[in-house]
Image (tube, rainbow, N blue to C red; front, side, top):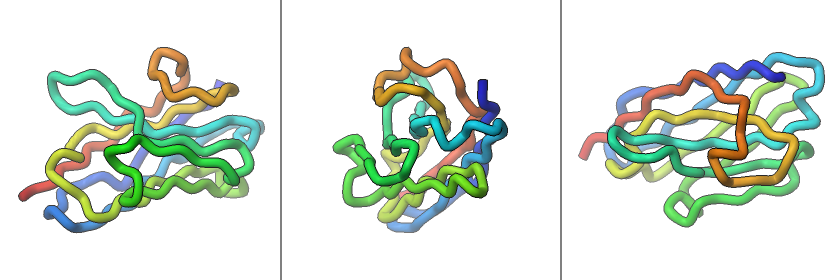
Length: 122
């Protein structure tokens, strides 16, 4: 029910930082939990981070905890993923997704953005 468009991806060297943005449409954006997933070539789409409707609760995959930070600005209808200390293993297409439920499983999401490519060189 909500349309999502990711941006901010690009090429960065290991140890660098990027901030991804996900712009949403819809008058009820603030009622959705928002999550980031990523998918590398030949691999399944995997969970990265999630933030609840108020922005007060977050949860991260162990592989990114301490390096990535998810946040949202409901007034701007946007969710962000600040990525620090990037590693080559972080290379993937990053997708944002919206859900009425607090879930980390990709199959539980029906609303996806088109994805933005993040490439981390060594």
